[in-house]
Image: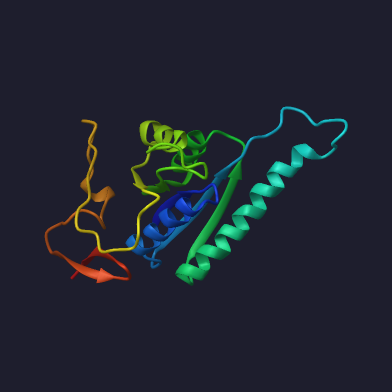
Length: 184
């Protein structure tokens, strides 16, 4: 089973990244995990009791709404959810270590949409243990003509990207809104 991690801050950019992943990897034999991190208050305020739990509740509710939106787009799919107060890159690495992740697919910017690449995206690209695909906020569904691979000189496993790399005996066929490799 292919395991795809989808970090989200519930923004339109993160939804575009999710739809990119759904179109590229499909739903057959693929498990998606929506991942959201939130700031946990250091202590409860005496004047605002329960504020410490409100951020966690908002994160869980936000993941439920985002999952419904994803299901409206993709239909039937295996989608899990994970909310945590840990740093995003640490949580993604923990999930990769525990269950294995074939790919992380995320938007280049978060809800703030500042600059070309957001701080979380930069941290995941630089420190993530699984391969990362970043999807720009201006992406619109079109067939994929080219993919740029940023290579850091480390071990390169061609089979970590089965849908993105041509292998002998495979041809490109159109699946959904994106072109993807399928075995003949």
